[in-house]
Image (cartoon, rainbow, N blue to C red; front, side):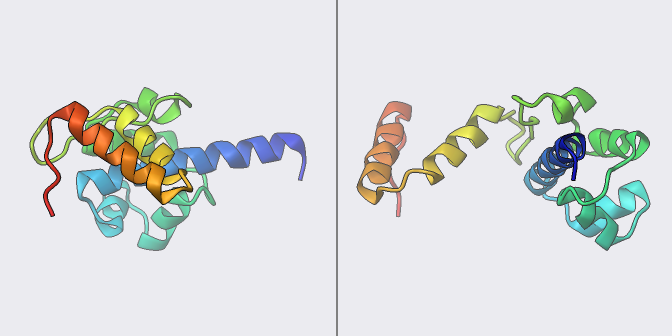
Length: 127
């Protein structure tokens, strides 16, 4: 595989990851999303895993269904916005924070960070 092919495969993987993130946070199933763009469940799964390229027309249909812009799918530093049930917009920093938290290997450090965030936000730890 050439360098250009590897770069293209990585772009497909990143786009697929963003599609999957937005789909999950919008509460849509693979089947719902597949029907939106007129493909099979299996084909849509290939888009999400970056195994197949999604057409611009299909990506635009998804963006409209999920309420995001096409730009949000292609900016490498931006994770698309999503709207949870409350209607508020949660920024990509939330997802980045969660990913960074998951990479902390030490459980004591994870616990300390967790309690720091709760304290800073004024939240209370509820079992």
